[in-house]
Length: 246
Image (cartoon, rainbow, N blue to C red):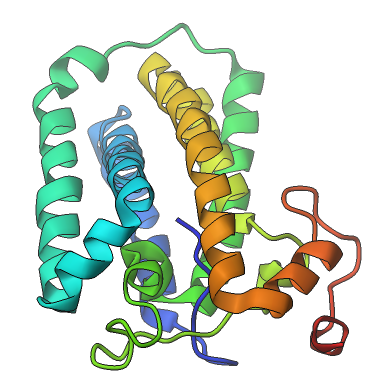
């Protein structure tokens, strides 16, 4: 999910640090175990949960906004983290004895490429999350718009035009896919390749809905941003705020 709302100029160090720490723990843990266990489990659980959340959020955005308006931000966190994310992760964990061993015989060049993809994606993703904050990870920006819960729940409502978003509109979507692919190549796991394909399919359904919603909320500013910044192919030079404000 990549609704770009946040507080201008603010760095969100907590989610960025948590993102890096998660992969560091997985790497150290798998090194101690002597095989790939924690990394594929984490990637499958995190992005499997994200796919489920995306599929039940944007197509039902009006329903969720109305339901949550009376219940608040904590209710959404319970639905999202405990229900959707937690439930998906639990299912994948229980099925792990089956899919975790679904590997091919690795070629070292592919594993090296996968490791490079993974590290690059973590670095760019950390940069993006540091600009975005929890709003990106927890969908609060989309579900609590202005005059419909944002003010009561202290959800920031500003289009983030900083960091990697000055080069490309969807840096997290690109790096998320590259991260899943990199993890698949590094760990030689077929299940993660299936997850990467599912992520692309889900993104094809979600992105038009998300862009329509952003146009409705941010109007001319977002349209101007779309004119200047490509959806997926990064610009060579970062866009300037003054160019968007013209």
